[in-house]
Length: 143
Image (cartoon, rainbow, N blue to C red; front, side):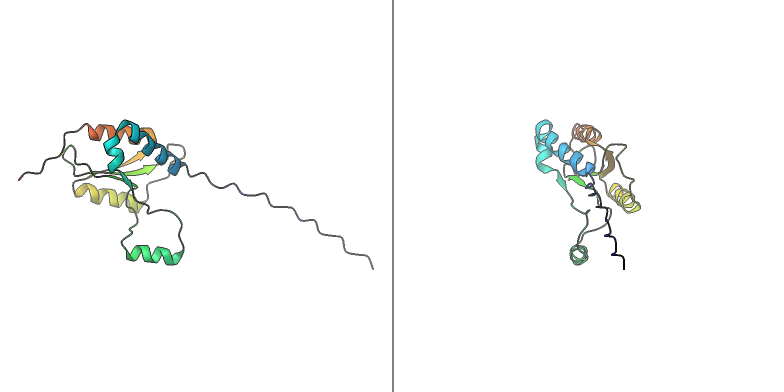
């Protein structure tokens, strides 16, 4: 009997972890705001809706009010007749993702409620948008 030849297995190449370009650019935006617009940097906040979670955690978060489509950043400063600014942040092209139907619908609902709700593609676009928004006169509520 002929002994069996040992099987040679190819070692699978390790997959590269995907680069979170959107997250990196958004973090750079927040850092830049600290230097250029300190008040905005203190008030702006991120809504951590995305990401992969264990199914039980996702269920609990939905029960607590997490909703698909909510924009990434909120600046609660009333300017230019708006009550605040919502930004759906996407990475700079060519790394940007499409706006989902849930995101688009949420942006429209916020606009109908008196907020400026827009999509920014990249840090430069977002800084420009925030600067232009902050240059608007404060929104005043009639007594």
